[in-house]
Length: 443
Image (cartoon, rainbow, N blue to C red; front, side):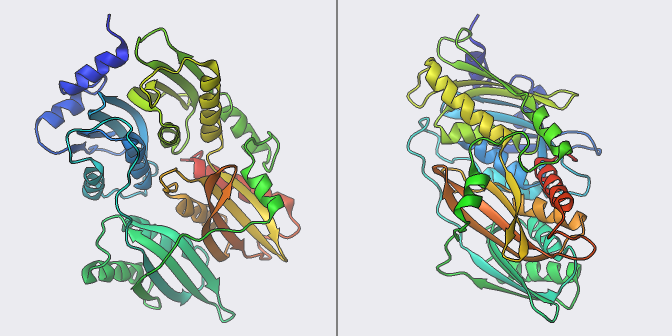
């Protein structure tokens, strides 16, 4: 019997994919590289099918975009022969409140599909030209949850936040400076700028003033944390009891039950990588970005979730040189990297910043320079749910542990309703809630 991975690649070329018959039929009915079957009722899966030329890291890029639109991948099939790929994702919105712009998502995914047919697997990775940065200036009266409300609107408009500076004046006014790019690449037009400001004013009230300018010469800022804090935030392994209450430690122990196995007996050309772990937000993205950054080629993959909240992942993989991963040391290195990226994709802690209290959230940046989607959105959502005001916020980058990290810094308002200066309980509560929101434990 031919190896499973090679059978899958052959089926992909013939217009089929294992477990994806219905979606494959939809692809046959049209010429688009991306076909969507939107669910007819809440709770049902929508099906996204991508049938296009392949390129290095395409699976990672697709998963990042799907995560950016607030969707959860419940299961999927991926097949490629190195030149052409066939991908099927079953997805659902993470919460009923998320309004998915399916047409916009399709256009984004279409734009990611390579247009040139002849491709070779894993040449030196090249990235498309950089997007233009813009500065969005907002002036308004301060109130709880304002920063998240603005972030929510920008997310719906597909405006990606790269850096933000929020400051509150003594008279209760807020100045928000957002450095953004446009997922639709239309923010240079007057119509798109007017749409953005109109939606902000309509949602937040007429007291808001809005201005969008070209951010010429903008460069991603680099955060500068004290060495002792950096060492604790970016350490490679987290101890079970570090910076977590009993509830979050129990959740982390559940996540640490992950198993990672390599099998070189099923295929003469591929190594089978099998992963079983607790499901969480962005898990598939974390796995595939690790494969991309480690130059591991995924020829065939299948992933699904069971009813107990665990995820099964089977990947037929090869090294960049086309060889199987047989060396036990190389297997250990990849296993250790995967375990770290799956179990600790985000770091959360609270520290003192002079007399003030600061929340830190950090995530690793891909080698391509792209950060993780929706981190700022989820962090501000969690703080809004707790009723905590954000006095100022910044996004920057810092090098640590031989890689780049995206660092989100939130200076929190120490109020009488939610005291932070001398309350370890409240600090742990914030860390718990923010971390669980980021990992989707409550969604």
